[in-house]
Image: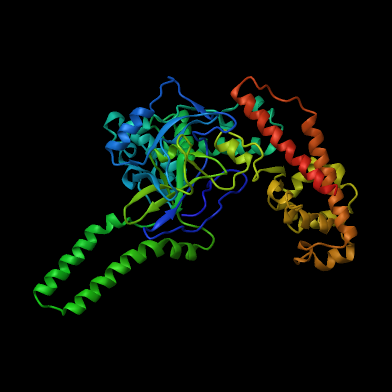
Length: 506
């Protein structure tokens, strides 16, 4: 079901992947974001009572049809709990298989009905229909929890983390210690959106803001997304059995010939299966760029930690209606099973998972949320430009364009963000070239050596200013979990600035 990726947050990271199918119609999935079991640099959550519920979870999983192939849930150094191999396991083995009916599921085209349990407690249906998938899944999670031991998922829900250390829960002073506006702005947007949804969804139902926030973080941290299928093959079985029954009666009563019945039944079966696979693609084609996705929060699979060097992947088997974890390589005894959440910057990992990866190849440094903001942040770097030309560039829409950032994977090849380079080329070019080509794609390509030199000099000045600001601030304390996350995060951002200066000085 495509590359694993979060579906919200900052910057835009709705990266879309394709089906990864096999003879069993496995559909590759991707997890979405917030706070996961893994820590990499630091643990992302704690338990209020300090109890280890892993043993009870495994017993519950086995009783409910979850298949585990020589794997167990254990404590992992620097990562909290994770899934670890008990014995050597060969490549392509299905390490975990979980029935689809055990998962909490939602889709992003907002056609689902609210859970009956909470719907009887003044859940606002109008807000429900407008709410994003993660808010609706959070409501489903709260609905299951509200059932207590009567919920079939009780043992699994009982081991979910009780608290989170993501920046969403930091104080304003702790956020300020990052000296990085992008995260502060992301957290502000998160808080405002969650507050608005809580007020709209739970009018008089008794669900507190803390409870809703906790549920949101749980589903964002542990859900997986993939293309929507209207129904699983097993859900189609009653219809298929009905077709066979009708075919049998038709043959018995000699209403049609055997060839006619066989051809009609085969055509109906192919149509049903084709509809399940083609339906989301047809909807996506009608809607344009929007991809229709289904999100699943699945027991045990939600315990697998992230690592860019993944050794497993998550998939959905249509004909078996189950979620599976398939190994990409041979696994040694006591080796942790790891999946990749996709190409995640440390901004995303910190805001939605609560950890930072050292040397993350997909990390970025956000200079500003727009070109206008960049000018306000570094006015001295823009004093050399012709004021009229600068105003024209901004009026043409350049100032309203997206995030201005440095990407480590681009710096590794001596390159910079295309939109940023285009903007500076427009500012540094000759007036006649600017007036002639400002409405075209002319500035997307490299200009004269002299122009490119001036562009790199401007970028050098801005990056140097960012580095000066960062180095002038005292590093946060490393005596606390949050302090260690702050320190790791800032050090990684400083590394990107230094890498950018090195590229620009060549």
